Amino acid sequence: MSLDSCCKRLAGLLCQGGISMQRTLAKMVEKSGLARSTVMAHLKHMKVNGLVEKEELVQGRVGRPKVLYKPSPKLLQMSKTKSD
Image (cartoon, rainbow, N blue to C red; front, side):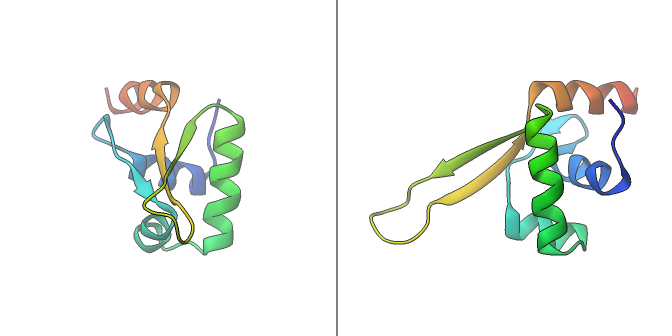
């Protein structure tokens, strides 16, 4: 599977040196320089294709849960193959 430039940028944030990095949406927007809507659309595309996993952390009774995105084993393998 080939990734477009935005997905590659996000994959690079999630797989740094072949190591899984969990990131929030806000952190990915900040680090990638992409618009929030662009990051959300590409993360959704990557999740549908089994490249990204989403985890919700409930931090109390009030407010939205914190959402963390992390690379799937498939994306980690792809990133290791590219760096070799």
